[in-house]
Length: 282
Ligand code: PAF
Image (tube, rainbow, N blue to C red; front, top):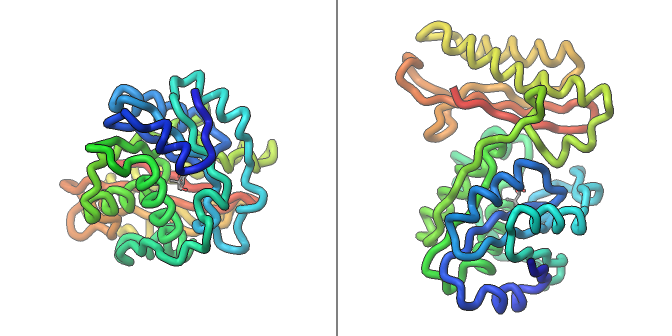
């Protein structure tokens, strides 16, 4: 496995290949990332992963500086998973000058839920994803890129980006990997204290409970159920941003009888200083 830092070296390593299988990450890899690498690998002729903590998607008060950077351990895990090439640019390699051209996703999808609580987040994500795609896939007839469904809205934003810019890239959405107790794996789980780690599974349990309540009748009072679910988490000491039932198609609140509609329950809440997100398709 090769590790490269510059776009020129990446492109040189990729010359001769026709269909990269690409897993973009911010590093501090867990089993969810490794599962994506293993799923993506048979779909391309070379497997590439990027490790880059993207300043553009962090607000000034967020954890850009403290986000764990663990390149050596990440590289060892990627090699064991069969990754061929790691692209780990320094900031000056990916953004040699301020990135003044940005990708602004349509606000109907990017200003709700995560985008509402993290303004500008999806502009930062879309911009770096577009740039990484251009580094990895330029000149390639086709490719595949894998993203985890834990970041449900992110997958939808990336799918739309690929569709609207007519990029010849298939998007693979990998299932959320969970710890034995059901907590969705996330690099940010490492911030949790021992007591918080025990409590953390309550977010996925709350989503499950909300999903079951929503499916219990054909016309439930969703705002009331969502408020109850948030209050229950708040009573346990969480600070919920949202727990909500949405249509899978566009993440809008469902209209009319729920029975025939594919839905997803999404949630984000802070436990201590750590903000966790999770979702469940119902
Ligand atoms: O999901 C992530 O780790 C990041 O948002 C991504 C897609 C690597 C872009 O920085």
